[in-house]
Image (cartoon, rainbow, N blue to C red):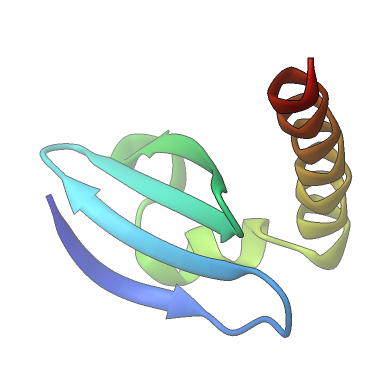
Length: 78
């Protein structure tokens, strides 16, 4: 697996990896990460993949990160 690109964002690190016939898009915020897999056949190339990662997509990831953080915090304090 190798990193091939990134998507700039103010509060989330977004990296694009390629492995075999898949692209992996990894979102990182603090101690949490989310990974989405796309086949090369689905998106054809990296530029098409980057077009799929819209602000709406990123905002849903941010919401999920908030939920993950709350779960992590609750788990640690219990």
